[in-house]
Image (cartoon, rainbow, N blue to C red; front, top):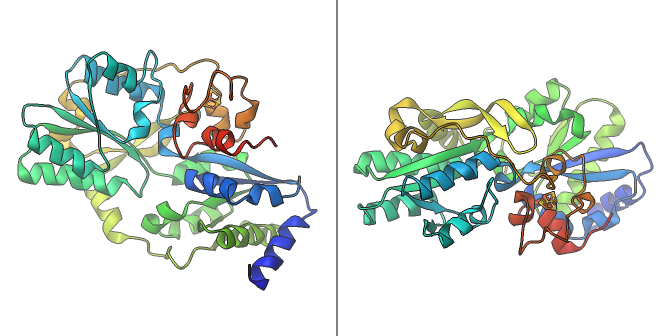
Length: 349
Ligand code: SF4
């Protein structure tokens, strides 16, 4: 650790100001902060809260139910990332549906799913498109490719989300945000200046130990000044402009819609759906899905965990009925989820 980082770490250890709630928005931050042991160096009056930046965790139960209906009633092949398969729906998970004969294909990207559809013209393939600004461009690209190549048996079920209005919805849950490094590479930092003008503070943070320590020290220093702030603490990767091409492919393929977030309810204009010109590749329209209101396990407190109102280990079924092998809620399934991080690193504070 160089001298500058040691000084920053010391500043954090010695912090004796008023209680500070810092929300790490990104699931990768949650896991890296645990893995690096950074929580152990924090004094009692700094509280790190795990926020809603894990796409699997914030996807509502009703979305899993829609995927189940496509698989079991409409006869579609579901192409998806691995984590979503184990997330419980209202009655069962996609893994349970597979045991009942549903066809579930694991893929590593939407383009893999589109390729699978091209190679299996006899199947109706639906890709489960969840994710934030970082992964959404690939879903848009897959749909555009399918249209260009004339692949009629491919569609996506969108649950894509954007983060800016989620920060607004969560402003009362934290004094400052550790903004996600990956999402910010697409959005750029303009949005954070806008949030600062609205009174919301935060810093963009990288993923190495020195980057996280620096970001936390900057939050302490800026908080002392008593004004809303924004600082880009990840300038080697995140720029003011972000990725114009990434944003353009999203803008020209999808449009903003109100979206349900697990635990947070409906957040206006925080979701993305395919534009009308792509409706032949929109699974909801193509298969005429009804509106489905899912209901999660009443014991699960994922919703409160995602808002920082409850620590995972305060959930009554944490580590008992709910474990990574037998997850009750999405936050225990996903490799980026707060409950799985608490379980893996055996953290109890
Ligand atoms: Fe939900 Fe399990 Fe987390 Fe409890 S421990 S909040 S049941 S995911």
